[in-house]
Image (cartoon, rainbow, N blue to C red; front, side):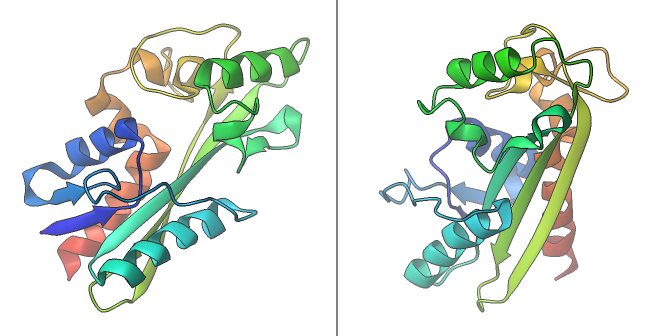
Length: 190
């Protein structure tokens, strides 16, 4: 089955392809020669919907998108919907540095990653799947796997950050992995 995934992010594309396996052919925005779809929403849900709706209207094929945010308790759930552009540059290292600086002297380091996947089936019916991973922000970066805030996010119940885990292990417990499992269960049940 072919699915269109409204992303340019090669890391996300790799995670999704790895999780879905050979049953699905996943095409990202680069494969479609599409430009980046502006994320103009105020919430993860809105941004996810904007991207999926754009792709469905243009191609009339089953498609999905996601939007993900890191929410840190001590920072009033920032960076949230602005996670990718928290430091203004869109650079992960800058985002991490700013987040760690903003948490200096904070004892409360609880955080959660939240992913919203919006899926449109081939008939245009919309479905929403949410995944949340609870954890904490550690004091310094650890690990080289993953992307974004993975080197400083340690999920509850684990001694390693997402960046210290294999892609297979991360997909089992991550916010995106949880939301993706719900999408897969939906696809299988059709």
